Length: 135
Image (cartoon, rainbow, N blue to C red):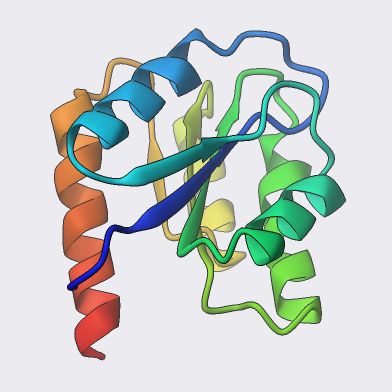
């Protein structure tokens, strides 16, 4: 990929804890990604609107509230509805292992749990972007 990957990091729902999202944002910026942070309390519609307006490559969702089973698939659904399925979605937060397969089936590309080293997220994102660029 010849240009910097544009990443929207979002905090959908009522969750007010954004330390993890801010740590990931810093790591991605330090790795050369262009990062847009939406702030707290975003709706799926708001995140999709920003993603399309800012022409991002992907959306990273951080959810600690337990609403991941609705919010993450809803973002994927709205992207498809708006003709923006090329924007891929990944996420992290407090997500039980048994909830991961349904999220992946719904179109979320990857889930990173608590304590995932930021370098692992950075390397995954680089590889995912490269894979999509060459497809």
